[in-house]
Length: 289
Image (tube, rainbow, N blue to C red; front, side, top):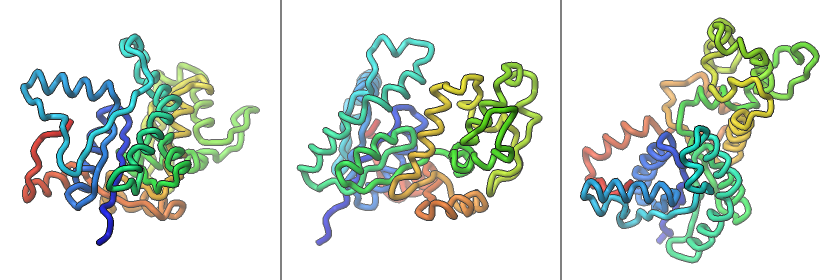
């Protein structure tokens, strides 16, 4: 008898990543996959407090074949009330979570069933380094659209570089170009974002510069958000496969363009609708976060 597959799911500690990762985990669990769902210690405490307040003590207990584990998020409590909390969380996870995750996976590998795949969401690419180091196959869940991936990924943002220079400054990626376009702060408020069109991204219709991720709306070329957006979108394509929360009929052109460079792209979505349809035939009690 074949061993039960065991997937360790590692979502970024924000609801925009946790929710689709949990939906995918439930679907995989329904197909016989053993799931270890990794949350931060802080988020687990919040979930436990909410469950206690609602008198739902089993809300974070998991169920058979679905286990919840924790790692620290790298923040101290004083950091959580800061105005730049989101950027602080991104910095902390990127630089401080790799070690705790490695220790967790090593511990899980000694149990049953053995870990067969590490599945982080985008923004948690340090997990891919852990997977490579430990020889564990990896996949990444891109939680938003294929179009969002295309506009974020620097390999495709290089298509923005129709001109190799603006003024006298050379650019290595499209992110550098976009940042330069914003070197004058008035560009952020004078309508420039809405009137400047980008019509050469593969597989996509023309969009305005304002449609591109707000992470690139900065006049600082060394901005952490700019770097984080670039490196995370690049790193996610280094996994063994990429799962996108979409479906082929919704984004056929952009998916075709993506697959010319990354053929191991799988569409599984919309996750919420798939999970709802499955629940019409399979009971799943609300005993998870």
